[in-house]
Image (tube, rainbow, N blue to C red; front, side, top):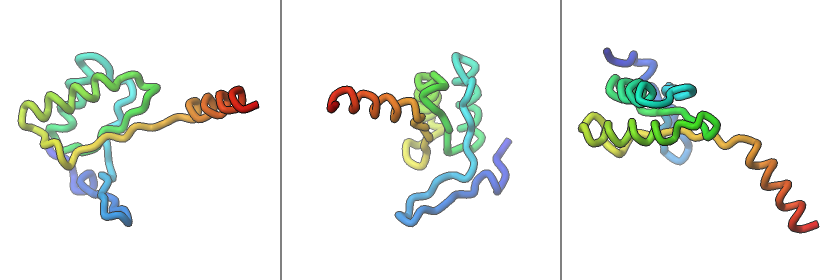
Length: 102
């Protein structure tokens, strides 16, 4: 199975960097089955894994990428992942700054 042409589309940034228009959402992809699902997505052509700290699956994302590289399915260049930083951390930092400097 291969991705459609739409799924192979990219957004081009002014800097010249390209970002895949479609990525695999990794929410709830945990454990062995999560790694397997991500590896399958990489094998079928996905070039972007979309994750976040709150998903608690950084280990699985890393494992899927590492195993895909080891197996020759994926080259280290041209593949990426998207990690979202949530407001929780920003609020915590502001709170700490207030306590330190007030």
